[in-house]
Image (tube, rainbow, N blue to C red; front, side, top):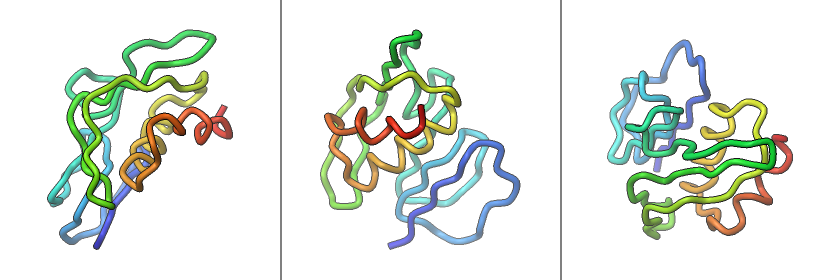
Length: 112
């Protein structure tokens, strides 16, 4: 099972077919499941609000984890994020890997 996670400002993408790709919307990859992240409303993962106290990650489409569990659309609280797009990439990777949405806040604390 091949998984691709691409951080913001990617230069080159590896070739191949992936089970899941967590990528910015500008990336062109071949994957059975593509999870886009960014600050635009068309992305799978974006921020619905942001303040000095924290952020709300918006999961705008269902995502299937590597373990086969389906994460439904929802909003997930996050700590304040100094680099939002990089944090969204990390959050996407954690969620796809199977991190429970209720544990995501704690897992994202090192990025603050």
